[in-house]
Length: 145
Image (cartoon, rainbow, N blue to C red):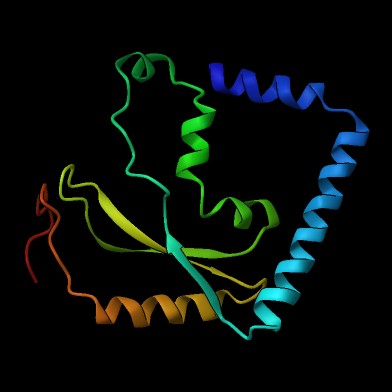
């Protein structure tokens, strides 16, 4: 798999200084987000779109070999990158469908560390307020209730 080889090559090329610098940066980011956002502002979650752009079609060449498209990945992960880097919990709930592609659109909630229960309650409250819609290309396998 080409993308796996790329990730291994990146990992092998990093020395102890780069790894330690990354850990220090991550530690600073975690501390800053917890103190300056969650505690000082007294918020339970940060609400963003799940992805930064509507995902494009998969190129035919990528179907067989995969692809490593860092610019696209950065655009897609725009809103959840920091949570992934710092290890903050998050949850995504469906809120609709893109009109042009019928791809689901999600709302992402990023929470403070060890606050997964708060995220689940927030997501449940939001889902109860949103109308349920059947996806444009839906097949009923289990029958109706």
